[in-house]
Image (cartoon, rainbow, N blue to C red):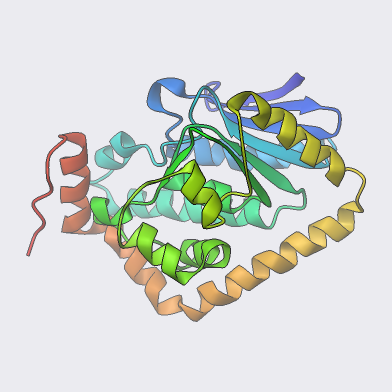
Length: 264
């Protein structure tokens, strides 16, 4: 593979093998946690994929980790600026929506931890492959946050309402076998087989009509949009949660490795 672009100080890389691109989160020291600059870089990388004539994408994380989700240290630093926090939250939503409706099909190759925003990214992909050591979790309530209506819609569409309640309200993490059982992932593989299998799927897409694939991805994204629009009043609550006292306490408790003392 050849590298097309190294973005966000080298922490997001776009490589190319023929007409297939490989987007890698390369921040192993922080378990591939995603800060605002990484979401900006991901947006830029999608544009570069089109400029270079790519026809399919593989999304993965470097090392034995897909992504631990949001960079909580960055969120903690932004707690004193609610407008900046809301802007960062809006960017996540915009980039996920762009990935979900992007004209190229995307396969996620997930090894190790996949939490929070990492799950959100994976849900925007057409196929999700996981290693036997993958682990998944969605714990916004532990941080005093809501989960966006669009993220909820994607999750319910993938795994159903009961399993969504279990992950979001129960706050538990699950292993790869359970993720396969509830259809959060499509296949389980040994770690060394993840990328070869992802490229095998991507090569199959190259034999299909690109405009037809793009149109189907947009149509499927519109179904998620319709649910998100129906929950319009809840968007304000979602963004407001980033300025809440619960969020301040939740992030502080996480970083200080203690139980949260939730405000009454």
